[in-house]
Length: 97
View 1: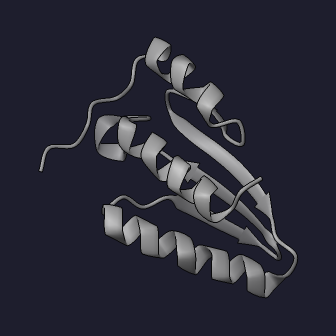
View 2: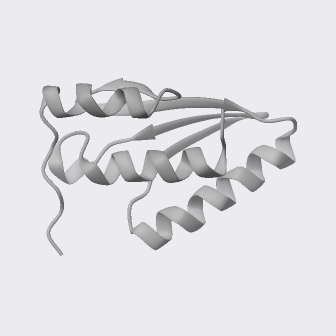
């Protein structure tokens, strides 16, 4: 299955307003989420992992006590693709602002 191409700066600029919880540039998207407890943060990682496995696209996740730092990029494309945007949308559905 071919991987999507890296988004242009204009395509990314058009998409980011639809992802207000995320920041980033053509190299990657980032979001930080603070959960009520460490266990809630770990449960969130498991939920994200289920989505990531389904999509065969995996985020970088850094857990610091109850805070998750998420980063998305399609490494094979050298930056952000539509796949990253879709994963960000699906993470937002799991962890609304």
